[in-house]
Image 1 (cartoon, helix red, strand yellow):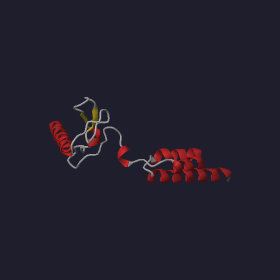
Image 2 (tube, helix red, strand yellow):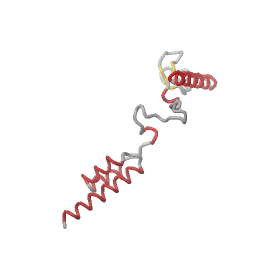
Image 3 (cartoon, one colour):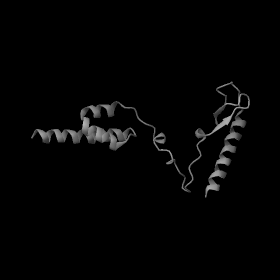
Image 4 (cartoon, helix red, strand yellow):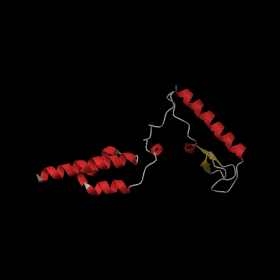
Amino acid sequence: MIVGILLFQAVACAVLSGIVANNKNRSVGAWSVLGFVFGLFAFVAALVVEEVEPEREYRSGDSEKQSSGIPKFNPEEHQKKCPACAEYIKLEAQVCKHCGHEFSDEEVEKQVADALRDYRDRMSDRK
């Protein structure tokens, strides 16, 4: 009788931990196993843990792909070289974080467009 109650409690905590983890974009399987093994402690931990942003959850090589099978262009993954201090900064940066050099809006838009064109050229060469 006691074994049945403990087993029911373990399964219930596993299911509840998995549901909470799924709602927070976490691994359902891992949290379910934790819920089964650690019971109420894992369920409380699943409630307390912060939510993960879905776009950062993918593994390397599993990037989002367009319908054509080509990964989407993400400006956050590209950098440019500051002409004043030669340090690399984010592609969309308006001001260099190293020396304070300012880029005009037109200059940034042109750099993003050039990077997008280069990216598409590289992706089309892979086919």
